[in-house]
Length: 60
Image 1 (cartoon, rainbow, N blue to C red):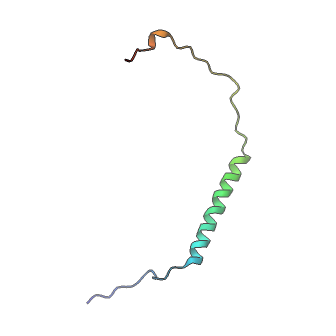
Image 2 (cartoon, rainbow, N blue to C red; image 1 turned 60 degrees about the vertical axis):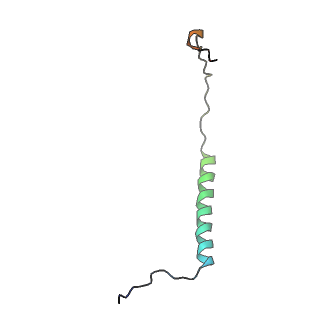
Image 3 (tube, rainbow, N blue to C red; image 1 turned 135 degrees about the vertical axis):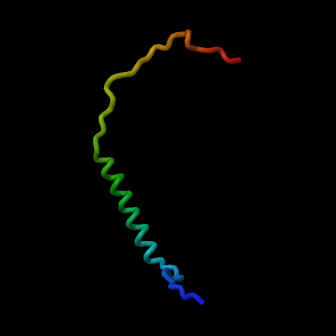
């Protein structure tokens, strides 16, 4: 007969799950808030590329 040690409790602890979810939500909100503070530059130049007609293929 082998003895084994129970390392996990079988009861569900709602309080610890709520704390973990709250911490994850706070971290996510902080990341979103910091990304909104960063001023990303907008492109100034318009990009225009002329495609010659010979590159088009007719598909039937």
